[in-house]
Length: 257
Image 1 (tube, rainbow, N blue to C red):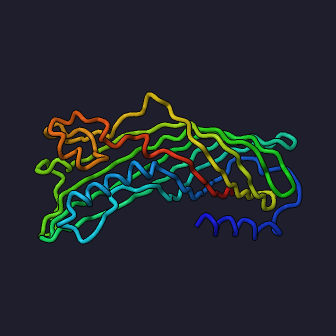
Image 2 (cartoon, rainbow, N blue to C red):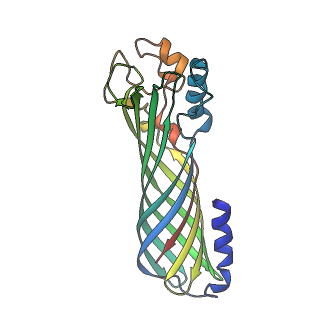
Image 3 (cartoon, rainbow, N blue to C red):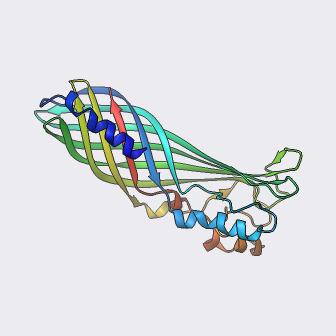
């Protein structure tokens, strides 16, 4: 997907304005973002779960996403000041990852992971031929929601506390993002930006996901299933998923109209 989007942008170069002021005013924006998570940590749950239930599963499963791909919408205010332009924008996006495991008796687990993003940012750009080139800085506010339900043989599902893994887990991760931006200018009204953004942690929000329906010390969503099963009192915080596991590099392609 990233390769195809890059080829599309390059193919539009002949249509781009040769040189000129960057589009000013308020624009409606759309985007497509590819986000990297901490794949090694998040993949560990599927690996340990698969090993624990190896005799009951048809094969290995992947319970948590190792990244996200999300479309977004928003608005951008851009001001051109004799060549250099300043922009301020907001963007909203959402992605979901859904997995159902099945045991030999037809029961299993249904785990849904949703990430909702609010990005607020500013950037400065200079025209370079048909391109606008500059730097980007902003904040990303990401809400993570994990729902883990038991699936019974008759197809019914339960989020109740009859099994420790069940429940709704939520957390919010906040990070600062910086990186370069290169935008293709099409005429006087359209800009197609490409941003590569790198996060910086805000340490005060590095918290584990919290179960909204706690039971028997089950107040965090597990990263290591073996340690989760052995941790009757929920004291092994190092075996839990963290909101920081869902923050990583982002590549964003958009359009401003």
